[in-house]
Amino acid sequence: MNNPQTRCGWCRHATVMMPVDHQPMIQRASVTGDDFDAPGSPGWAVFTCAGCGSASLSQGFYPELGGPGKVYTHDFIPLGWYPQEPLVKEYPDSVPPKIAKVATEAHGSMSVGHHQAAVLMARTTVEAVAKAQGITQGSLVAKIDELYNRHLVYEHVRDAAHEVRFVGNDAAHADLVNNPISEDEARAILELMDMVLDGVFIAPAKTAAQKAARQAKKAAAATSTDTPATG
Ligand SMILES: [Zn+2]
Image 1 (tube, rainbow, N blue to C red):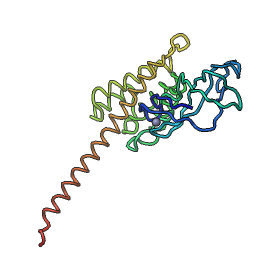
Image 2 (cartoon, rainbow, N blue to C red):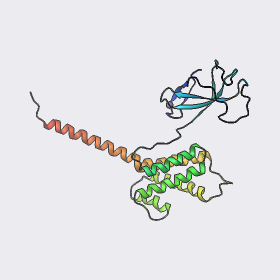
Image 3 (cartoon, helix red, strand yellow):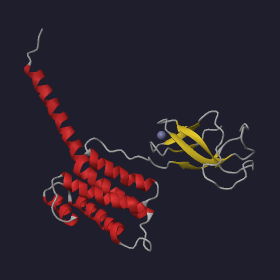
Image 4 (spheres, protein in one colour):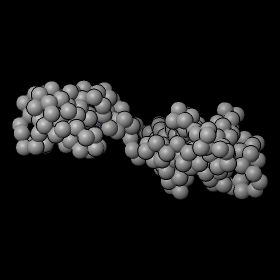
């Protein structure tokens, strides 16, 4: 088999995909009704990323004969790759585990096309962020504004949180049968949710770590200066 090139859905780098040896091409990952032996009929093959080693599925075809037990001597032509993005979103330790779990569920819903569920979980995440900061009273509007009033978030992060709230409210109450939340809208909302997590937890933790590292370096330098040189 050949080594197709694509962007790895896991590490997001442009990479060469290495075929997994001795695999038959799987033709029934999705039921298409194609004749198993028809030349050029689509099927699935497993590859691993040369960069990160993660496995990806490609839907594609061999230009000439395939079929069970046959040796494929022709190059596999990929038509698409799965996943296109990591299936499980991971957050750094600075995000409290319970909040990371809800936010991960939002991304998990998104990855399987459940856009309404994704924005509902995003709204839940924003509410949990406020609660984690000790803001438990009032509506979500009030909680978000209080995050800002207490200087826990910048203005643009506050606005991001309100946008998540607006669409989350639609997902909870509006007529989604006639006005469903689109994939693009849900994706944008998750980006804004991640901005809130970054603004409240991730960026401040990074800044604190850098400050601690700088002070430790300064303290070490002061100690070495204080020590009389020998010899
Ligand atoms: Zn990769």
